[in-house]
Length: 316
Image (cartoon, rainbow, N blue to C red; front, top):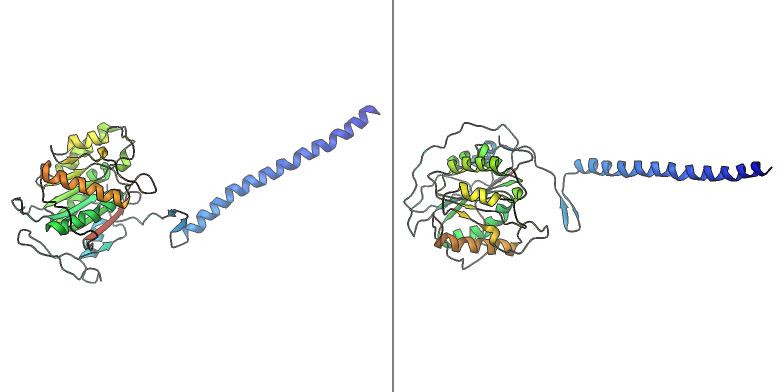
């Protein structure tokens, strides 16, 4: 009798242990299924979603530079009606003002050669035709650069922002050659490296950086290093060694106010960054250029803008 009673007492205990286990499986399934459903629903939602200070953005469709340039040149483009301001020292071609274009992918080209064209002999009063090319940091730097161009009589004709791009995108594709051939700049600003602070394959990136430097031969340029939010593993040293002597601005020495993401400079940080670059351009740079401090900030931004995303268009 004692053993029978004992077994009856154990039975309910075993039964009670099975119930939580079943619910655990159910909750595990729900925890997996719900995020999948949310992601699926978001993929069909046409707008970005904001959660507090964060914004979820979708990647752009695959893109093509040639298609963008065709769209900018098109007379049907409502943004392509104003003419570029002309100066006596710059040979200009017709170009839309303030045109921003995102176009579908057609296909990269790999054998493009930049047509030869004349550069003005630089003097203290030279008014340059400038293009700015870079990663996401270039998107913030273009506004204070625009102010400096207004103040000093230069023309910022294009800002090309290539999200998530690295040296491989800029060096291995012919994107820069096509941009140069189209806009005929007399001065180029490059700014990227933010996505390569952790890079350790420095030998391969050195080869790519040398290739990019070759593309810039004969054109005055300033290669601006990334605004590091922490110490890199040598990418700044690699880029500086590939650039012409005196043409690389080492940004990582600067202490700049940061945006909420902690990685990019804030609006004030971008202004401080450009102010430092401007002083260096007038005093130390190999390719010096007039960069007097703007008497007015927030000038109208009228240059063309091309945006690319390396996740959808790597260029090679």
